[in-house]
Amino acid sequence: MTRSQDSAASDLFAAVYPQLAGWCRRLVDDDGTAHEIASEAFARLWARWTKVDEPRGFLYVTVANLVRDHWRKMERERRAMRQVGNEAVVGSQGEHGNPGVRMLVQSLPERLRTPVLLHYYADLPIREVSALTGRNEGTVKSDLHTARELLRSELGRHLDYTR
Image (cartoon, rainbow, N blue to C red; front, side, top):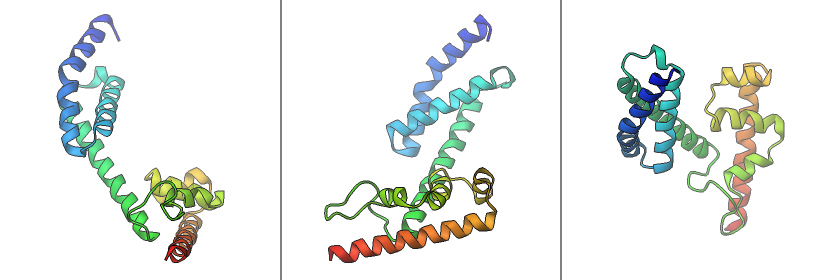
């Protein structure tokens, strides 16, 4: 960037970022996520700075798209948690020693853990997981199914143990 472009970018950031982050905050209901999304929108703008005719419009459209992607990812994670039989608790050990879903995912063999992390946590489609892991799509689907069954079984075993 030239000095004048750098100055214009700084002025735009100072003028627009607070409003953009505030709007984003109302959409995602989380300060940290809102600031991450707003910052990502600016990063994408900087990468295309000389090609964008209307920077404010670009920022708002980009934030809207990033928020939509965030909501999709959150819904996918909720569906994944329901698939393994545990909607509520994600994280570390529960009060009765029940492992959280993430701990159980970490305990999966790498062959199963990698596709689960890429598909359910990184929100990648099966086609991309297949390309990244060098496995056929059918193999990835089979691994995801096997992983879900193992997780369901482990969660069921731990839930029965605490009753």
